[in-house]
Amino acid sequence: MTERPFTVALIVPTGIGAEIGGYAGDALPVARGIASVCDRLITHPNVMNGAQLYWPIEKALYVEGYGLDQYAAGKWGLRPVRSNRIGLVLDQGIEPDLRLRHLQVADAARATLGLRLTDAVVTDAPLNVALKTAASGATWGTIDNPDSLLRAVETSITELGATAIAVVARFPDDIEADVLQSYRQGQGVDPLAGAEAVISHLVVRTFQIPCAHAPALQPLPVDPQVSPRSAAEELGYTFLPSVLVGLSRSPQFLQQRGAATDLWAEDLDAIVVPETACGGSAILSLNQASTRIIAVDSPTALQVKPEAFGIQVTKVRSYLEAIGVLAAQRAGLEISALTSHMRGITCLHPPV
Image (tube, rainbow, N blue to C red):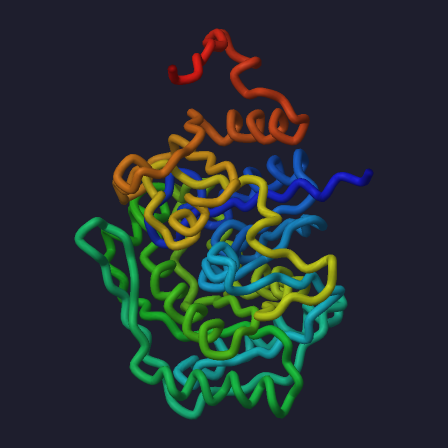
């Protein structure tokens, strides 16, 4: 009998300052490590996007956060694809030179990587992104003209045949100096990430189509103190390359069951998440399922631990240990057999 594929999800929520996964694609090594001990890895843009750096993990499914939540809740399925036709939506607020830089990235992705892209659609009004910070330190944001974004996406889908959407919105350059400096030095919270999630969530919720976002910003002055974790964002004029690579193989969303190769929530064997970020929709949905929840001691700006929701988890001290737990689970081992803390079996007597 053929065993079903061992399927694992890796979630590092966006904009919460995760010690690993809160910077420019710095959770990619974790994704690569987990992919080595599973058959299918489901993860999201915050993990896979390293601005101009990326790693094409063949067995990884690149799923936007809202879509991942719907999948975990059992409402949507995932259908792997050979390739998507990516529609590029550009904010009208992007200056001509900066817009040209992004068009050149799109052409380079076609010519150098062989990706399939449509012509670009420019929104009919500037999106006017505003950045916000919650009391916890987590970041979020707003856009003034969401309808303009949705009209552009609809045009890309209905008139140009896009099956996935890359959005490039003009983000403010006037980020507080101390916040930006802290992030560039590998501390604090990504000031852009929360607003990016708002944009992609809106598109996926409305059109049920894969989507990811790349911010458009003017290049920053050279800083010799930039942390290795943030350095991927210092390499050029755009964060778009990793988004296009991810979307090129992003699975399509399903609302009805079909092919045997489609993935649904019951196919998920394990999910890995920071221990202090266990209040997300996906984790709450999977709490009552047979999926093993592995909570990693990787600090974030949040303090939402599994005990607060009565969530049963396997706690580990690092992503290295999480990979070991997954390898043991795939092998069908009792996890405690690999430690010195196995308790003896007791005898339960039937009631008299």
